[in-house]
Length: 325
Image (cartoon, rainbow, N blue to C red; front, side):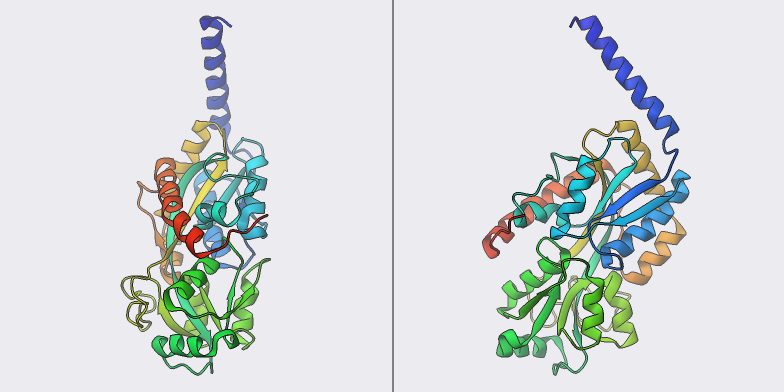
């Protein structure tokens, strides 16, 4: 092919992409959340998707595909058409999944185009009422004493709750019985309130209501400072678990090769949605913190994803036996 033909082909492709973006979106957009309905990531996804739909003028329809630490839903998006009508909403599990599931069918960098970050959400350690520990320090001592008699729920390898549980065990030496809710984590909180499991370490987007209603006892949050939304809950450092800090970040992704004009339109709409009153009010209620305008971009999310893979890869490989799909 001559240089002239190559140039013409490139210009034609660019023209087609621009034309597609100018009409985009012309129908509803499917957002795959690779975790269960009613869980913390699903909650954040629904809030931001509502605000994003107002910016784009089209509905964003949430579809939950919960299995294998989020890798099944992620792979479905990676295989979908590169037209901006199927997006992925994922959390820190996007960075940790390759180390828990080395044979996963989709890779977070090679198979996706980042759109932008959305929010950081703290984690909180909660327990069932009547567990027998008045505070976090006593809880850790009790858990170490009772060992497998204490249970902790999580949503399976690669998920935020699993990561928090694993880090907590590594930091404290407690070895509870792990109860996995692979098809969705909302039932875990129901079971905790009912007394069927003892502990959960999960995002404040779903634990705050249980704490405030008295359905669960809060032992600690995973931030350096106490949260404004939960001012009476101490930090991990305060209960004696030193240097334990974990916030769960979230972001939107499109299949690799999605036209740049579409990515740019989505990113611009996302930045505006994050500044909306709807998002500000709902996120504040749940302890979620919207990211800066700089981070709500493809470059911002790409940087975050790579840095988190670099951070957590060695930690996971050192403390966990990798799982296989």
